[in-house]
Image 1 (cartoon, rainbow, N blue to C red):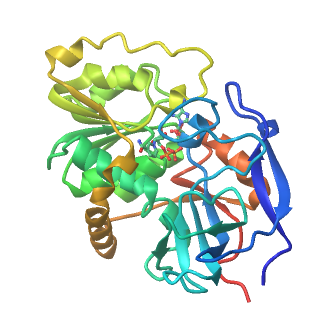
Image 2: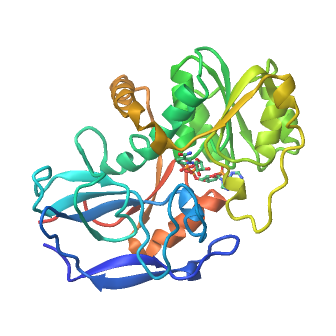
Length: 342
Ligand code: NDP
C-alpha cells in the first residue's frame, strides 16, 4: 500500500555558516510512478552525512550542488514496491545513494545494490556496512597503508566513520588513540571497542599535550576527520614516515572565512610524512575486499556499532544540523517508515 503524496525535504536557501531549520522545507510532492525499466522504492531509512554541507554551496566540487527548491539526494535504504526492472523484485531491499531526503523514489536501478536484512539491520547499510564503513576501510588500509602494530590517532572517533576506523585499527593489532567530543562516546570506544586511549577534545586544556601523553612513542597514522587544531597536533606528534589519511575536515565545513592553516607544515618535510586526501567513490575497486572482511569480522564478533535515530522526514533537517554539534553517537540515521508494510 502506498501513500498519495511523497513527502520530501527541499533546500530552500543556502546556509551561511551553520545550517538552520529555515534553510529546509518539507514539501508534499506528487507520488512518483515507475515507468519502463524502473522501480518504485519505499524508503525505510535515509542518511544524513557531513559531506552534504558541501553540496549546499553553489560551487563546483566532486559532488554537484543541491538545487534550491528541489528534493536533496543522499543515501537511503528502502523496499521495492513496484518493479519493471529484471534486476529487482517487489519486496527486495536496496541501498542507493541518490534517493534520500524523501519517502519514495523512482530509480532506473543505476547505483542500487540489494541488501540482506538477515545479515545486518537495514540501517547498518548506511553506516558500518555502508559508505562510512567503507570510507574508514579505504582510508586506513589503502591511503594510510596501515601496518599491524602501529600507533593510530583517529579524530571524530565517535562518529560513523571514526567508530569503524578505530575498530579496524584494533583488529589489525594497532594501538589506537581516539578523540571525540563526549565522555559517553569515548567510554563506548574504550569499553566496547578496546580503544587504548581516549581524549575529549572539548574538555582538555591542551590537545597537543593530551595527544603527546597518550602516544609517548609518537603516531604512525593519523585518520583525519576534523581538521584545524587536530591536524596541527597530529603533525606535531607524528613519527618519521607517518601517514595522514585526510578523510574530512568537519571543523571547517561551516566556516564563513578561510580557516587558518596549521603553522607546523614544515614538519611534513623533516619527518617525511605522507598526507593524502581521498574520496571513497574513487576506490570502489576495494568493495569486494571490504564486503568479505567486514562479513568475516562481524561473524567473529569483532565489529560493534551504534546509531542515533531520528524519526520521520520532518526531523531529517534537524538530524543533519545535529551532526555539527556532535548530537550523534555512531551513525546518524532517519527512519522514514517501517521495515515491512502490508
Ligand atoms: P560523524 O558521524 O562523525 O558526525 C560528525 C561528528 O563530527 C559529530 O558527531 C561531532 O562529534 C564531530 N564534529 C562536528 N563538528 C566538529 C568540530 N568543529 N570539531 C571536531 N569535531 C566535530 O560523521 P561521519 O563519520 O559521517 O564523517 C566523518 C568525516 O568523514 C567528515 O569530515 C566527513 O566529511 C568525512 N567523510 C569523508 C568521506 C570521503 O570519501 N572522504 C566519506 C564520508 C565521510 P564530536 O562529539 O566528536 O564533536
